Image 1 (spheres, rainbow, N blue to C red):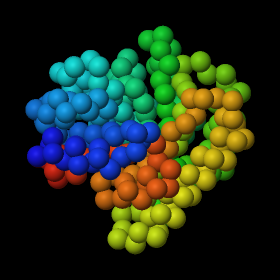
Image 2: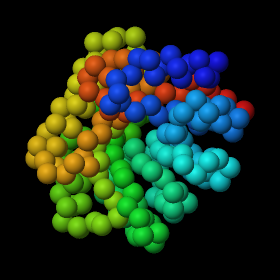
Image 3: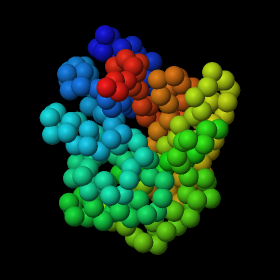
Length: 222
């Protein structure tokens, strides 16, 4: 079923939209099956689980950290993580800079915005993001690269609300690109869209979607 599900999703994706298979809580054999179908980008939201899977699986996988990241856990994923999707404070960005420097690498990051009508979701307001970017620029960080934005829409059947929230994130991206990153080709990603809403996200400009249950089935919490 995993192979079939991946094929079905990929048939719906424009060539410029990246599929990230959200493998959190899923066992190694499921990830290997997705890998055998050509998927190379996987998303995890727990540091310990991510490090264990990185050790066990092929090294050409690009690992995306998609959850809320605690600063004291950055050191464990800094040697290998490809993209951190959920930077929501300058303190976290500074920690990523410090840990990336220890490994002489640059870690790509996205700024997470709070676009949903749900208090439980993390993320920046636009004004906070501007302040963060100005601090980032002044600090002349060499080991982190802000490459775009990320957000999660409200979990609702109201598709117009979801569309509006994704459009808001796209507008944030456009404003930041124009005001701060116009000459930086790195700043190009809009990470939005999950199993229940990715077609809308693509219509609103997503460049990477994070799909879990539609590929692997419901989450395993045991």
